[in-house]
Figure 1 (tube, rainbow, N blue to C red):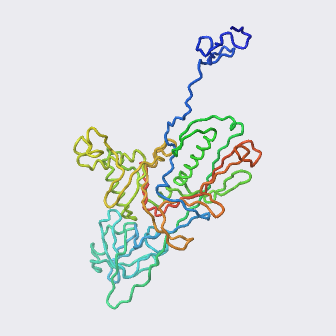
Figure 2 (figure 1 turned 60 degrees about the horizontal axis):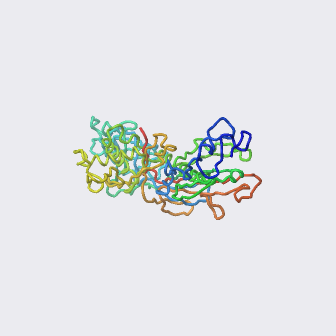
Figure 3 (figure 1 turned 45 degrees about the horizontal axis):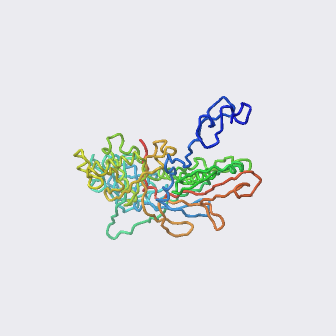
Length: 501
């Protein structure tokens, strides 16, 4: 059987009576000469399974590891944190008076740089009869002690121990290294009174420092028209949550949900408050001039109220400079809450710096070419483990893990500003304004808006006239997502943010 050019098939195609692969009975998919020819003999082999070339793409999970989520009903969450117990002032002024009447030094505490409890900015908390220790700001090695004999709202008249009041010599009064504006740190260490004297005048009322944060509203949606939903294309997928199976157009909806869930955590980590309060923003004709306040995220809270360390390990050889840097961090933690257990969430480069730091203090590692740490006693036929998941230094325990958010090429892996964060483990005690009592909360936790009738932790709903929803005349299906939440970072002075140099 044959056909002419004007027949049902092109002249070059001769159908076979049986399923046989012959040179004149296949459809060509690549010919550009027309006549109904096509490009290739056989249909392409189709892999219906999606290739997971990026593995698990979600970066969430950090807050689930270190915190909790709790509802709230207000536009603002307020919490209180204790102040330090002892009275101390940094970078204060000392003047040497050298007289034999009541004092030989005048101390002017720096009211803007105080750790004192219950003190207004207009006055200090040092009282008559208390004994104080003064040290120089530059080195902390020049020390002088004295007893307070008279006070005003902003100054203290101090009789320095061991000084001769009326000689006026070079060694009289306080050491020269303490004299001048901003040269002296001072703290109260006790008191001394004479026999038969009256009691201490005045008292210190304990106070607290109050902090607040406001929730933000996050939104996203996925939309598909009705015609596209009728053209079903199946694909086998494995989701980031470990589930597998076949999806069609809702594959995009699934990824939109995963992306939004990541946004919920990323916004809590990266959130910033507006420098100018209540900035109007036009959200459209029906919602014009809405105020934008922003919210305080984890990084902003640590930079404002916590500890920031830049250039960990510096440009030194791997491991060589990291231990000295880390010891400086420990010394600073001693001055804060000294919480024994802490977690390190690090970028890949900083995590390797920590591994090298720990390995470098191993005697055999440092003195020989062979490593002495690892799996199975480092048998030559076994695998070696050159990483560490935890270690102890001083009185502190540290548990180390990589933070995917800092490594992913589409998130913080794009820049080098943040190298990691140290988060204290456990809970802290705070005063809850709503309950009127002290409560225990994780140092990091998320507060979301909720009531008996409305839960805004993570809302999703379907609108349109496609996919089972019949809410309007739009020939499409829209899946909407919404959340309203903020992060509470309590006791931020116990956190450390590692930043690039």
